[in-house]
Image 1 (cartoon, rainbow, N blue to C red):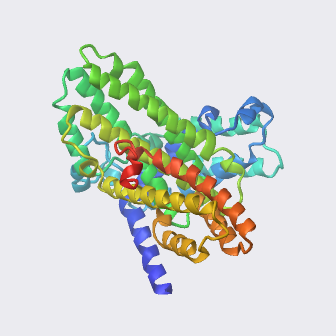
Image 2 (cartoon, helix red, strand yellow):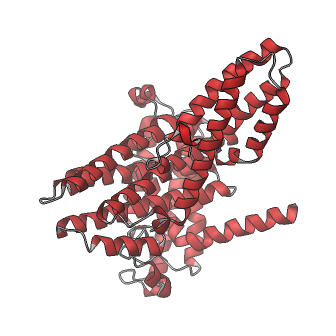
Image 3 (cartoon, rainbow, N blue to C red):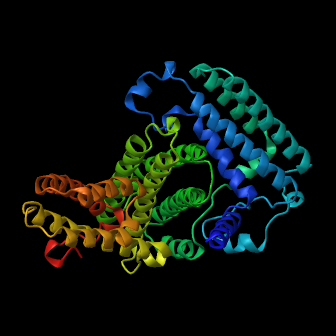
Length: 443
């Protein structure tokens, strides 16, 4: 068991290094830090936002200090020879992999080591300022804003920071990007094709950031440190929405079908973004329990990933109906199959509990427990992690019920929970093109 765990951890570490080598990860963190000091990007509750001037920003300051320390560690790796990322257009990932720039080869970075040293000093100074603020029990909005102003000024001044963050895009799977680039070249009018290149490029960046979160979630990374990555996702998503609504939808000669898909995509993104930030991530910075942090990160990132992938698929199919999700995203078909299986099994469980809850006195307790056990060992793993604990609590309640009246009450509560859970699963973006049919057993 221990050896298997070690192998899994080695695989996760290798995946992180391959997909996000130090320079690329550093680019993500530096961009994320700049977005983090814009309060409009934070998942504050309405009451928190109304009293922002009197809020204690100590939790956020801890996050900044931790991110700065991670940046310094990564910067050390870059100084020791890790290639910096290469600026590239969408679809050029294979070419970039064949011709990485070494530090000394980067144009415009004369005396690269000196410039990196200056960036290191700036990050160190930011750490010291953050530590000084953390010595107090209360970090005011003014203190927090001051820290942000100092860091933003130093990062804007830093030549190395500018070169590192310019090509910060992490892109998507090369074959999906190639297919999308080829598609945009066929879109008419040409202006719309150019706009769709921008749209698909933005989705690639967003999905890359969500992949970064996914890898971090699978490792032992500090989960609160991911909050700036979420604020960057929020900022980038808002910019994408502004682009779609302010430019792509205004292209002359755009067909009504494409206009409707673009407009519907923008609406869906706005709704899922609100759901992730105003529900799933609210209060994230003040949480302490690791399981709660894990559940919120998984739920928010899962919502957004499904929404963005579904949006790319819908837009691509609008211009080429032959495109499918599996072609664009290797995991898309798997996610669809898992969601269909989960919906089918949840529907069967809802019907079982519903039909028997009114007959608790004559109900065969063992049969239900067998179904629950099968679900726990099977489709439960396709639920969001945040739903595991309440589901398991209901199972324990049913298992421990002995008197018919006690069992009847437990089953009624369980039925209501399962119906709510079923409704949430049925609203997954990946199932949008697969409406539920109760007569077909949920398929």
